[in-house]
Image (tube, rainbow, N blue to C red; front, top):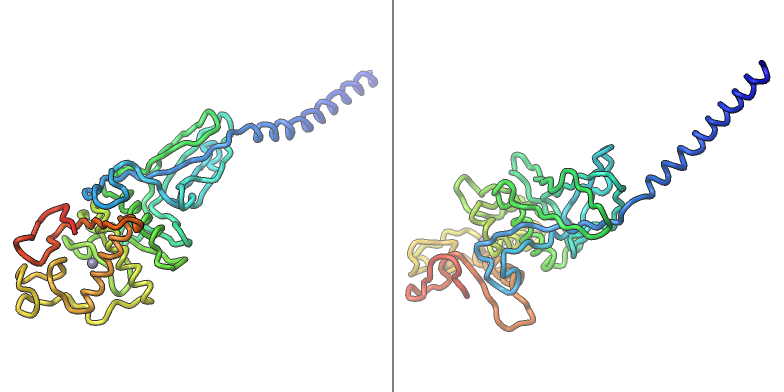
Length: 312
Ligand SMILES: [Zn+2]
């Protein structure tokens, strides 16, 4: 009797050892079963001046250069990736997705582009929060490969296309600087006001009209690049108060227009921003240059062409 109990005891102990021995091996094998997956990310855009210049002549989705992305395994909320994608391709590194698991994919309104320059599109200066968009809540690739997701204009606020144009501009025309942060608020300068640079902070403000025009977005980014290159200064005497009796004969009594005359500082600021926008949206290897502006571009009334698509 004692001998039988002894055998049973040994069997139980042996069984426990087998289980203990096999479980870690089984877990290791399960973790090893995965797919190599790359996620490449894009922005939805719909510019009203898409046909201007050499780049982005259509409103097809654009590469989300360096966008911050989160990839999270749903079963345990483990982060598979939380960082910036490649500044040129908008793709993640190769990630391992476990077989049979689902994943959340979320994109944020911030991106690191060339020379570690950071673009952040934020809610407002009072509530300086970034936006995020969950582009997949239970993604299961099913096989290895490259998969594409687009940050769409989910709330009709034009956040993706604002980030797209600003990121493209700074990525290609960073003005020799690195490690700079560009803040873009989804907020007009003042209620009902225009898009602008805050000359005290160097931060950018965009109204709805501005967010719909790639030349305006690049123009404002140009102001910020100039501000940073000038170490936080704007040109002296940059008031926009020149009147018809002081300068312009036509159009009358306007300022801050392409065709109006300005005091020197204002003219330098606006001239540089327009130049910057022109360099962003034109191929420098070509001799022509397209510049699309939403206001008159010529001083003379006979050539005053109002509306979109004015071209210089
Ligand atoms: Zn300007």
